[in-house]
Image 1 (tube, rainbow, N blue to C red):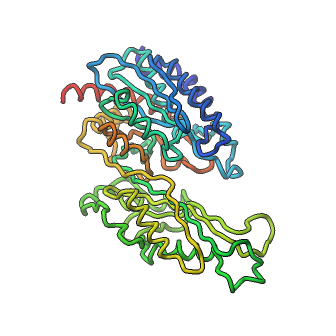
Image 2: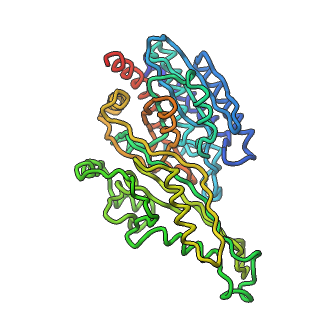
Image 3: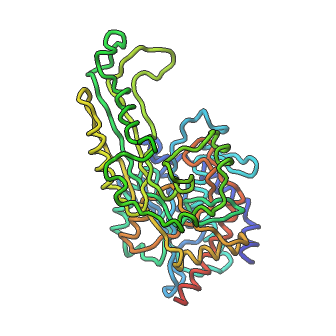
Length: 457
C-alpha cells in the first residue's frame, strides 16, 4: 500500500482522533486545568505508542509534562527531531465563540476548536505522518518526538529538560509545524520568526479606591497616568521611543525588501478580513514588512477601576497593563526588557509609584534558504502542492528555537500548514481539513528528501 492509499483509507480515523485530542482543555496558563494537561500528555504518548514508536516516555517537570518518543530505524540514518506542543491558549472571551471551544465542530470543511491549528492539529499531523510511514515501510530517517505542554506560557521548563537530555535529543535537524502559509494556492515557508519580550506594568496611586467626586482633580488617577505613559511609547510616526530600542535591528537592503514584498498580498483584502478601514504602523514600511522584519510594541491588556455592570464613580488605586515587544534578528530579549524597564520607570511622574515585571521572552530566528533542511522542505511542498513555496518571514515567536540551537547545536525547519486567518489565540480558532491532510501527505516527503540530500552532502 502506498502512503497516499494509506492516508485515504484512514483519513476518517485520523480526523476523529484529532477531534478527541481537541476535546481535552489543556490550557497551560490556568491551574484549574493542570489535570487536563497531564491527561493530554498521556493521550499524546499513547497515540505515539499506537503509531509504533518504540520508546515513549512522559517526563515530569516543575510544570507540565514533556512527551518524548523515538523510532530508531538505523543508526546510520539521519535523525529528525519533531517539536510541537499540546497545550493551548485560554479560550476567553467564551461568548464570542460560535460553538464551545472544547467541543470541536466541522463547518464548511474547517475544524473549529481551541488548539485546532495552534498546535494540536499541526502537531498531530506529524504523528499520523509517522504512522503512515511505519505502516507503508517508508520511514527514511530516524525520528524523535519532543511534545511539550508549556509553549503558550513561555516554555518555562523546556530549557532545563533540553540541557539535561542532550544525548537523548541528538539529531540532525528539528522539524516544527507551528507556523502558517500565505495560502493553499500560494504555499510558503517561514524562514524567520521574531523574538519576544513580554512585560507587565503597574501604576499605583492612593492607598485605596477613592470617591471620584470627593478626591477627583486632587489625586493622580493611575488609569490616566498609565494611559499617558503607554501613549508615550510611540511617536507620531509610530516609531518606538525607548532609547536604544533599534540599536541592534537587522536592516534589510532595498533588494531584500523588494523581494520580500513580491509575496502575493492585498491590502484591501487584509483590511476587509480584519474589519478595519486602513492599516496602521511604523511609517515607511509596508504591512508585510511591519509584521515580519520590524520590531513592535503592543499593549496586550489593561485593567483598572470599576468595569462591572452599571456605574461606580471611583478613582482607582492602581492600573495595570501587559505589553509585548516582538523582536527581529540581532535584538536580544533580555537587553530589550531592561531598556523597556528603565525607560518606563523614567516616564513615571512623581505622584505615582510604578513597577515593571518581565514575564518571559525569546530570541528571533532565521533559517538559511541554502540549507539542506530548507531545500528538502521546499521540494516536499512542491511535490504535494505542485508549486514551489515562497520564503517568508513570520511575525510570531517560537522562543525555544534559539534555545535549541544554543543547547543542541541544531537548526530548526519551520514547515507550517496553518493560515493567518485561522484565529490563533482568538475566538473561533480553526484549521482547514485540507491543510490537515495536506500536512500528513507532505511530511513524509520531507523525510525522504532530507535523507537523500543528507547522504549526498
